[in-house]
Image 1 (spheres, rainbow, N blue to C red):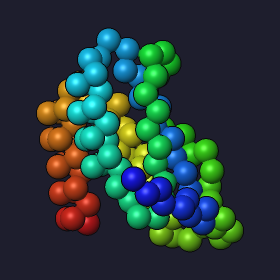
Image 2 (image 1 turned 120 degrees about the vertical axis):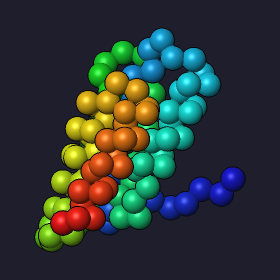
Image 3 (image 1 turned 120 degrees about the horizontal axis):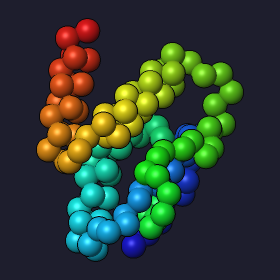
Image 4 (image 1 turned 135 degrees about the horizontal axis):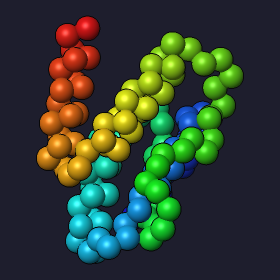
Length: 109
């Protein structure tokens, strides 16, 4: 598998995923679903499974962008909205419903 070069113009987010008590299969499925939700062309996302600590997302590198335009501010707001939805979901079905409602709300704006 050929590795792609990291574009350091883009910010890097690390998704720390608490997998304590999850089976290997459940972890794999959860990571796949996270990858589908967090597929942005202008950010880099790394998923780090761990056995302790909370599930959270951190911006570990804000990129080489000197002037944060409206597009980046909107992206950060979108990421924060998704984090709130994820943390408020009890299971993946709740999460899917909440994401659908969030997308509909954004379409109706």
